[in-house]
Image 1 (cartoon, rainbow, N blue to C red):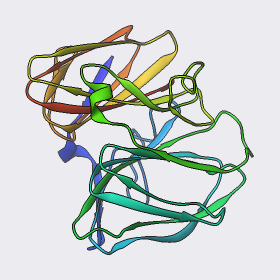
Image 2 (cartoon, rainbow, N blue to C red; image 1 turned 60 degrees about the vertical axis):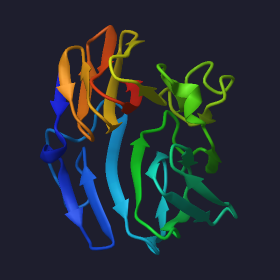
Image 3 (cartoon, one colour; image 1 turned 45 degrees about the vertical axis):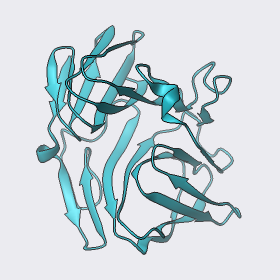
Length: 235
């Protein structure tokens, strides 16, 4: 089963400094049919104006992954962590027993991110933050695991999360094909960060999504230069 979610169908909010589109219910956007996809709870498509950002605020018991599409985001938290994550790279925050953090765009132009929340397998874990550069050459015509908690993900260089899930990215040239196998009981949510593609024959355009369940294989074919982000979770 594949459900195509066009960008124009997403919920949204415009606060001036922040323009957000929500793949699932979030904030003031409530859609009972879009409360998550398996263990995936939030996927926000955020545009943050220069010199602004999210002031310090708390989270707990959630795995929060930030994929930077354009610009950079600067993180600070009450654990003493501070870091700047640039376009194409990823930061993770395991909120666990509780963390207070801020996320600012200190760049001269708009920063664009995907903010992804995955429900953890264990409640009350020790909070953690990490960031890592992932050169795009490592994901040409293949899904590179950027953050994950499945067996083997850490050994492959992924940032660790407390969930049997993975956040992956790939870049494809026009006409290239990519296949990803889903084990029984697994679901996937794929978004085109850039470009257009087909997913098992269904067309998606830039910032559209394909929600996939009860499929053994995902076949992606790029219609033009494409950058794809895929989250695999327990269904």
